[in-house]
Amino acid sequence: MNAWIVNFLYFPEDKSAYIPAAFQFLIFAILCVLAFRWIVKISKKQEEKTRELEERILRERQLEKQKDQQ
Image (tube, rainbow, N blue to C red; front, side):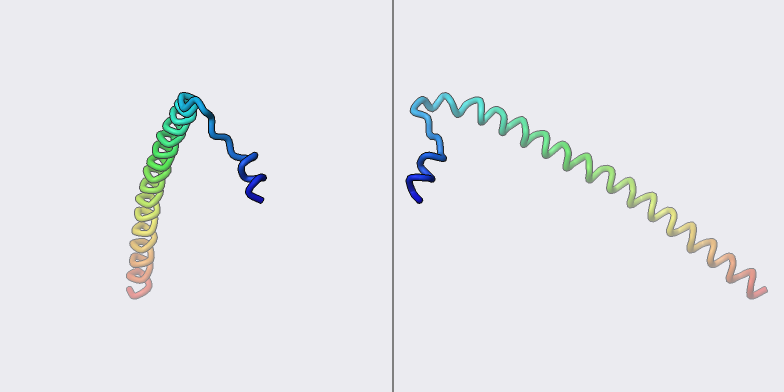
């Protein structure tokens, strides 16, 4: 099993081969952070819209109750 793992992994003699991989990793990490922040921003907007809708529905129910009592 160890021979299979050694053949599967690639460790170059020239360590400069790691530079492009590190650069790609950095780009993808930044994109992940930006995507996460974008999703959080959209979520907050949806939360505010939902809160406003909930408040409107509660006000309408209270008005209906007041009309029923009169």
